[in-house]
Image 1 (tube, one colour):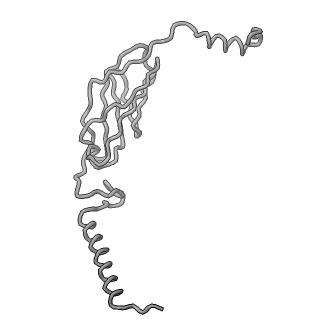
Image 2 (cartoon, helix red, strand yellow):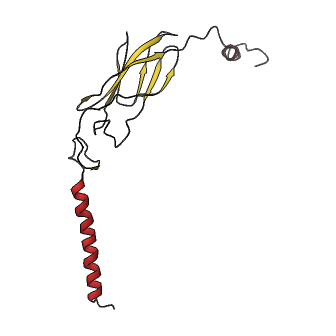
Image 3 (cartoon, one colour):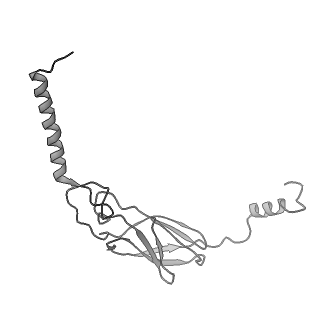
Amino acid sequence: MHKPNKQDFCFLIRSLFVVLGAFGTLSTVSHAGSWGSGNWGEIYWGTNPESAPTVAPTVAATQSESDEITVEFTPYPSGTGADGWRVVTEYVLSCSGLPSVSSSEPTAVLVNLEPDTEYLCSISAANDLGGSPIANNIVLTTEALSQGLSPAFLRAALCSSDNPPANC
């Protein structure tokens, strides 16, 4: 059995100071917030003032059909404060002549639209402290209706009928 000696004791004390020094340094530059408020559960290095989002969201992608448009917003970059150091809880898409669409996800869908039509829109985001600036003049366009019936649609309809042609 090894008996502790002076060298073992010195190593233990030095290790303890290193560990305590590291925790002492970290505790002075970070905090995790309070349960249920602001940035609880997230560690920030320093003090970041919480606010409404400071910049308007941007459009990452759109998908258009003849009667609807899906808009995907670009997520706020983490660690920049653009989201107000708070969770973004709402994205709003507003287009001229249409009811606004609100979503908790960074995707919004406009429905019951006219084919081959341009819509002038604006977007914004919000957290529990308020709304972001608004991004205006976003033009979204629905697809035109396809003319006539496609050959694939006609073939599928004929082949599923009670009296299908021989070449189905």
